[in-house]
Image 1 (cartoon, protein in one colour):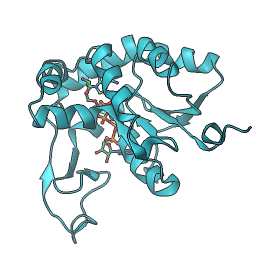
Image 2 (image 1 turned 90 degrees about the vertical axis):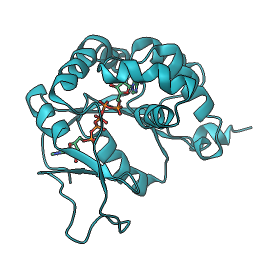
Image 3 (image 1 turned 30 degrees about the horizontal axis):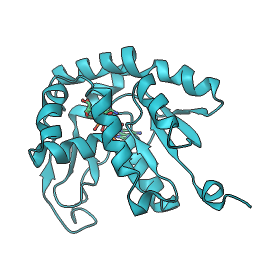
Image 4 (image 1 turned 180 degrees about the vertical axis):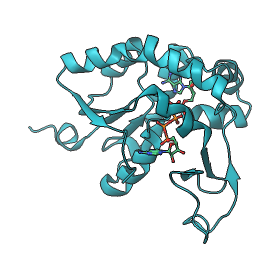
Length: 205
Ligand code: AP5
């Protein structure tokens, strides 16, 4: 008998340095594919806001621009993948970020493709330091590259929110974590024949 669940499931990994545009492209791809965006960064920020045990633990790492320990992240994803909307696949945004995370993921999810958004480091600071999001729906904007329309966000709101870790100082630490701990994942997925590189140093569209 055909395993139909396996046939229809598509699990996309959006890979790239901080500020590469993973979240921005995920929002667009969500509309095109119907797959839910699973962002470990968003999940952690929600936990920080809710002051849960995970949130309080993660905050120290996030504020320093360091990666949150693998076991915390893997538990979060394991729980998230049990939800109904993940049954036909998901779009991982910012996960996995280390080889142990990718190895743990492979035990319960088959990754279909890894889309790596490549952006040089010197572009990253400008992107991250100008970022803000809609305080109501979370849509991502940029002071210069993607400003809020005069009519406000598509959801009708004019409220803006900036992330606590979007400072020049923290960006340097986040880039260092990316090069030291996340970059090695490229070879992991290249060897698996899943890695597709995309030039992200161009227009959002
Ligand atoms: P996370 O929230 O995942 O942050 P990140 O990886 O640093 O990525 P960003 O969200 O900053 O960038 P993005 O690529 O989504 O870019 P965006 O589309 O917003 O993680 C935050 C923290 O949580 C980590 O530091 C870590 O502590 C922890 N964490 C999360 N996941 C973890 C994991 N798996 N393991 C361990 N720790 C984890 O775009 C950026 C800006 O640029 C926006 O303003 C946008 O409008 C603009 N922009 C986008 N594309 C373009 C373009 N083509 N041209 C010009 N501007 C553009």
